[in-house]
Image (cartoon, rainbow, N blue to C red; front, side, top):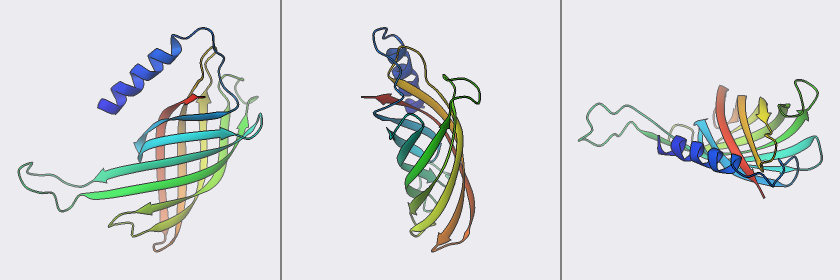
Length: 162
C-alpha cells in the first residue's frame, strides 16, 4: 500500500509541472506494480523504438499465523529486458500502443534460476507538459531453462524521464 501511495504522490507532483514537455526520448526510471513489483526503466532509441528494463521482486506464500515463521513464503527476483515498438497512430499520440519481445531471468526457491522469452503488449499515456509516462502492460512468457511452462506477468507503472 505504501508503494501505491508513493506512486500516486509522484504522479500528482509531476503533473503539477507546467514548463517541461512529455518525454518521447531519453531515459526514464520509475516503478511498476503488479506481478512482479519493482523498478522499471526505459531508454528511447528513436521516435518509435525503446528498450525497457525491469528489476522486480515478489513474495508469495501462505501466512496462517502471523506469530510463526512462514516457511512456505517464496521470494522471487525478476530481471527482464524488452525491445519495444510503439504505434502512435493506433489510438492517438498521447496513448500509443506498444508491443515487443524480450527475455527474463527469475531466481528463488520455486524458480531456481529460470530463463524465459517474453512477449509484451501494452498502452502508455504520455501526458502533455510532464516528463512522465504511465503504462499498463500484459506479458505472456514461455519458460525454457531449468523449467518449462507458460506464465503471465502484468503491471501498471510510471516513469520519470531525465
